[in-house]
Length: 275
Image (cartoon, rainbow, N blue to C red; front, side, top):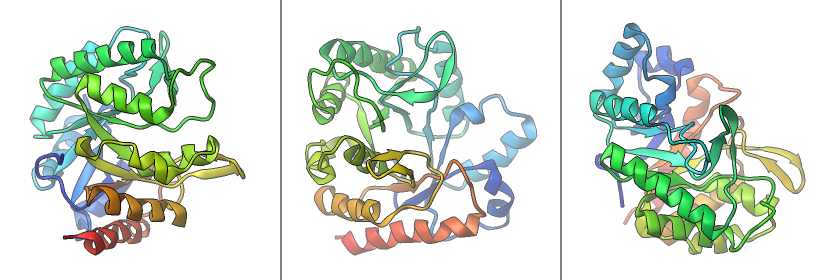
């Protein structure tokens, strides 16, 4: 399941790189991902600068604050603005984290949803409501987490699969998050990936993380991708086929040229697995 016009290797669209991208977009970048909350309602000059890119390159929207697993009411105003933003920039896909991040205010962190039947019903209802308001299916991203909820009735893969099936939504597969969780919670990342439904995958994320302790990784998106995560991406292409894949870098953001080798590495792995 690929998004229309989405292919190849991508990079998160950051204001830090705007001047460099305006001078020249490197050939290895096939698409961009944008956090809509950072651009909705922006000034006219910034909106026009963005428009020069959305007219020339495929974009996807990856949300930060919808809080699909949260208990506070779904932010319908944000979804209305998001729909207008996507129409304005001709962006066909929106994805969000399978997590929650609000409690009568924004918590500025992505927190895990308990792996329970009740949590599934609650989250599925909110995903369906989101899809109804947007008039399209969305993708949900497997989230990293550091503490197990006090109550769990199933494992993470079963939880994700059930939400995907009951909400009839797409999977935005974050390969680094699979690796981070596999270290933090002592499971085999390869076996975990085999349990996921490849027919629902829409695109992939790659990112770096921070090793706080030998068995505690923090999903920072603030460092280079490490070899075990590259190996997991290679395995994912072997098992699932080649999907559009995007490099995230949200903290310690270097110059654009320093990120290009990682985007090129994604592209080289995709060529290796091309049929």
